[in-house]
Length: 162
Image (cartoon, rainbow, N blue to C red; front, side, top):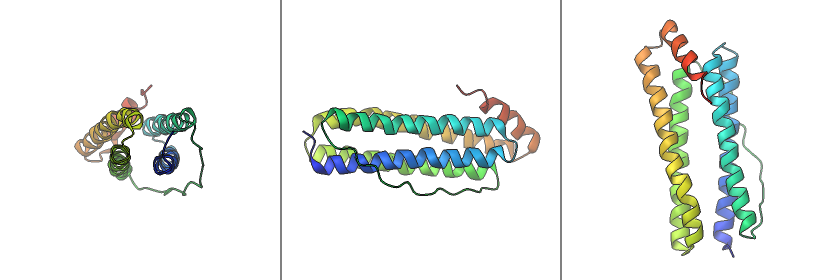
């Protein structure tokens, strides 16, 4: 049986994961409007990945016999000026999500819930990868110095994401 504190916290995190998907979808749409198809594709894949994270938490709650309670998702920002600005926001957002995941782990420890601690370790590892990927792309964007030809090459590279 999952304690109500963890049930509530995991439901909040489902909302946050869905917000992340919504945010990345908005970023993708912004880049599509600027014909940056590769950047847009990378963020679309990222949006699907965030939905998968929400589904993992949903399934865990169901498996534990807890109630899934979905709440409204906040509207994300819709306009950015450059890919650099977008990926600065992606990295900042992933760092924020890492903080939320760490708070969930801390709560599971306080509640002495070993199963939830174990479940959350996948997300701890995932956040290391998420921050690394966002940071790597941002580093490449910074190296291009926003030169259109260089951004075009990076756009092509990001469009290959599976």
